[in-house]
Image (tube, rainbow, N blue to C red; front, side, top):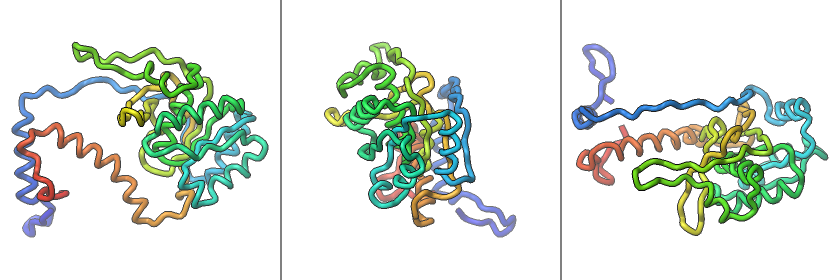
Length: 266
């Protein structure tokens, strides 16, 4: 950005301004995407409290007796947050799973669902980032539809027909509710959709967990549950922003994209 001394306001640099104008010219006459997005009916978002205190109040309110914890492996290994959560739950803690890999591998998801089924869990609590949050939705899908093997998830994958229409299979509602305690800014706790990776095909398939697949409540704490440098916390918010930037880049004509190493960040 450059500053015009005559008016004292910031204006785009000539290079960035030219790229924006080129994109506007190329976009003229194109049809804008349209549609309707309906937000899932989340019961509440709690903020400004210690996550263990807020969770204790909610568990007492709904009278959960067997809480299955899906936790980040990093938090479990390097911090005491999972131990604090387990201590708070006491004999209400059914089990802890801290083995969900990055990008939510479906092998890990089904293993967690089978473990939750065996313990008779009546509530799932997630503590971690987007992979763990997505895993809770997929575990709910497995429990609500009787899935016990990773290959069975193929029957619940959206498919694109020859005419370009997207066909989504019928999905039964989860048989267990969940509460999310996010530690990153992925915002996956606010939607019912989830990504689940097929490690055999090396593809991350988007899936909808059906009705009530999203967490019933999110606990947004006033500080990270683990010690994290301030710089790292600021970088967490750049991931979703970077995804939008890449989508816009793909929408622009190929000749307008800067060569690798030559484009500026703006």
